[in-house]
Amino acid sequence: MKNSKIIIMAIFFLGIVVTSCSDDDTIIEPKGDYENGILIASEGPFGSGTGTVMFISDDYTVTENAIFNKVNNQDIGNILQSIGFEEDYAYLIANVSNKITVVNRYTFEVITTITEGLNNPRYFTEVNGKGYVTNWGDPLNNDDDYIAVLNLSTNVVESTIPVAFGPEEIVAVDNTLYVAHQGGYGQNNIVSVISTSSNSIIKTLEVGDVPNSLTVDDKDDVWVLSGGKPSWTGAESKGVLSKINTDTNLIDASFDFQATEHPNFLSIDDDYLYYNLGGNVYKMSSTASALPTSEEISGLYSYNMVAKDGVLYATDAGDYASNGKLYLYDLSTNSLTNTFTTGIIPNGIYFN
Figure (tube, rainbow, N blue to C red):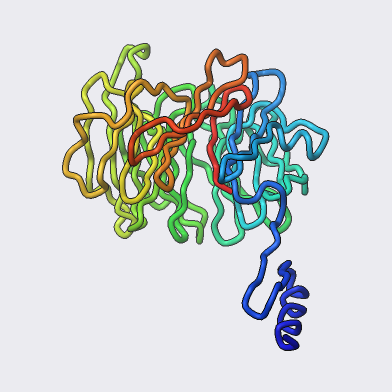
């Protein structure tokens, strides 16, 4: 027991909170009230009000709305576009308010707010202590879009990477970034491949029109789902699912949808791809040679959708003016198991 006490004291001074019940049992204290749960980011009403974040515990027994507002007695801003993570920190991106609020991801206490160097920020990812944030700039100007490079030690934008118009979702594989250019207020059809060593574009890949979502599989290849141009553009185009081989940075698989099919919300779970098409959820093996022909779940018109650990999480924005919903489906049975009331326009589903 004497040796156990010495070890516990050493761990304590290293900054890890651990208590011991016996020589064999240890209890790791939680880092905060919002550890081990699901975070739902809601945009809030456009142009007024504020975005909010909801917490749901992993066992679904604890729910709490507007946790940022309650903890800090302030608002996030308008609108809450997305949340990015790096170690113990969460980066709350309010794109209309042109700011990123940095919080402790487990307590949601504010650490700092970043406003300089941003212009309509959208999504965040992290590589080697740097944050990379897609920025639309003026959505009506196709020539001012960029990636802001954020020093995560100082929380200062230290440089920018000019890119084509409409950069949206961004993922990292090792030291390479993959940026989907959905097109802002217009439509684009490319993925920028960016080296974080030089902070420069090393390749531009043409995919389908309006790439709306990215995901990385267990082989570190990047899958891109393009929704295609909608009919109201007067130049409607089909959706396309593409796979980027990240060893070669070439597209080594591509799957075409029908001319009027516009899929969205791509995610991957247990080597299966999931997406929504016309209110139906489809499942496809990452090694399949063709798109699936029958749906797994029907009648699910979602505002966002993520599959993780055998559960499908889907949000419903409702009338876009009042609280939305989160639906949970068991993917082994494709049955609805839980429903939660969220904030206004729930658009992000994250796991803490």
